[in-house]
Image (cartoon, rainbow, N blue to C red; front, side):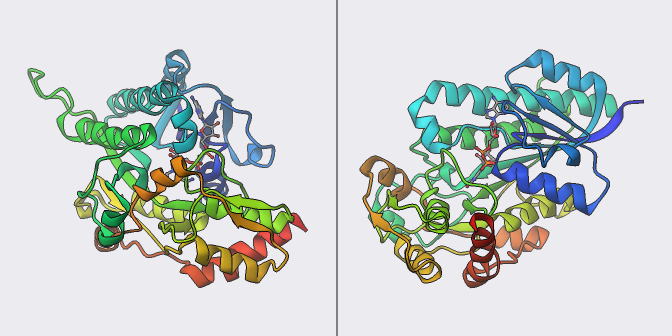
Length: 338
Ligand SMILES: NC(=O)c1ccc[n+]([C@@H]2O[C@H](COP(=O)([O-])OP(=O)(O)OC[C@H]3O[C@@H](n4cnc5c(N)ncnc54)[C@H](O)[C@@H]3O)[C@@H](O)[C@H]2O)c1
């Protein structure tokens, strides 16, 4: 008998940390964790098994199909937006070919099991691309269908993988003689910038928010790489985990979309700075915009419309801006760096 598991790729990343801790607490889910990097010691006992390996390694993925009954996949492994711009072709390989490998694995699993495999995909506001700052400032709450003209390799990868998810779910091998269903139940969330109190980001372009906070808590000076007026949507990690788990458990018939916006609050960088300085009066933060990274952030929406997520699967963030900082981020980072 093959053991039933939930596969988490990119398990050692920021979302992986939150997701593994949460999943291992709320029920008896057996977690099969995969990451190209070694996994943190504290996560190991929470997983059925950890495999250090690459999502581009098809032999490895083939072995997983043979050994486990994978009922759901949280495909988190990715090269994030800033890192991806330094090596776009490698990013494309990992972000797109890697996702294709996981989709293929899901098709095989669904075939063996005779039932759909859920494929949870964390997309990003990087899938959007507004042409200039004026458009961004006038766009209001951007809907899923609007402004899908990403300007980064990462954003192109995310948007294309959303399309792959749609293809595999609805049109897979549509010319086959008897029709062919992939058996994949693809569900994606376009996340805003995520802020965790327990991990620090690496390689994203919304990182200025969490970096400001973690540097202040550590007593290290920080140069913010965007202008004070820069505005992006953000969310704290517990809400990101809540969103993933809520979407996973939503009845299929209530879902009108494959890709959903979610958001929580959207401070400007100046407002972020003010809150951080209030909590850490000795913080040394200066604004020294990097114009290339600023250009990327200026192409991402200042706010997104998450009405569909609210209506279809009851999405509602636990943390608004005040609660996020006062009850989660500030106490937790203070404790962490004490
Ligand atoms: N953190 C955010 O603000 C944010 C926002 C929107 C979307 N997302 C998406 O959520 C997912 C997880 O993000 P995160 O913040 O945890 O990122 P992260 O960079 O912290 O984690 C990604 C993990 O993937 C692993 N990885 C990279 N290449 C791999 C490969 N070839 N094979 C196996 N593992 C590999 C890395 O070692 C890392 O542990 C990503 O797909 C990201 O695009 C994140």
